[in-house]
Each structure stands twice: as structure tokens, then as C-alpha cells.
Length: 186
Image (cartoon, rainbow, N blue to C red; front, side, top):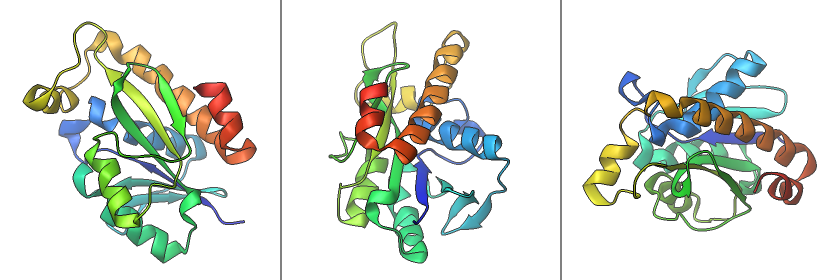
């Protein structure tokens, strides 16, 4: 049985740590620490290998994530269904997670890039809610500013809990299947 490619979406660099757009990186970073895996650079990504996973953080910046994912899928000869993308979602309340077996990008440019480069949307994804709890969901330039600005410290415990649940969801999804994971975590 081939390994799963767990792709956390985000942007590289200190400036983006603890921002809403980087919660996908946080999930993969958590898994890397848990398995004490050693990331290497491959296909313009940081990739850490475990017994069951390739843990991936594309270093292409969000909007070109598909380039890195396609390179890795081809290099490792993986079935698309073994790719799991972890992505932020402004349409979900902060702290909520939603698992889907397939689907569109929902307007997320990183996810759209992956769909475009893989030529399919038939891969599981775990969406992590980042909508601000204390105001309306921003749009346009305000949305870009929001997703690239660090979380307010008062929300970090909610974000940490969401990351922890997403890690558990990945474990369930990869060991018990997507239907069980969706029933437990959606």
C-alpha cells in the first residue's frame, strides 16, 4: 500500500507564521514534530517521510501550490486519492473543521492551483475554519490583509485545538476511511 501525501497549504517565511492562511502548515508541522521526522527539500517543498506519510509544505507560495503537489505525485507515483490537502477556509467559523472527499476550490487559490495542476478535484481535503469570530467575514483587499495578518493572541488556543483535531482527523481518515472521518469530525 502506498503512502499518503499530506499537503498543508501556507506561505513560507517568518512573516506568515501564526497567520490564518498558514494553518495548513501548522497541521503538517505538528505531524512532523509528532513523528520526529526530518524534512528535506524536494519538488520545491519541505517533505518529511514517515512510515505511512509524506508530510509536505510547498515552498512555492500559496497560489502555486499545485506545481509542487503535481511534481511530488508524479515523482512518487501516487494515486490522487492518496493526496490529502489541509487548507484554511474563510467560510467556516474559527476552529471548525470540515472534511470532504472531493470538490471545488471554494475560491481558495492554493486549492485551485492544486486542482488545476492535478486536473481533478477528486482528492480528500480538510478545511480549517479561519473566519473571524468577532466581526463580519472580510472581502477583497480586507480578506487578503486578514489571512496574512497574525491571529490575535486570544484566538491562539482555538487555533491550537483546531490543529490538534485536524491531526486526529488525518489519523482517522488514513486508518478508518473518509466516511468515518467525516462522521467523527464534520
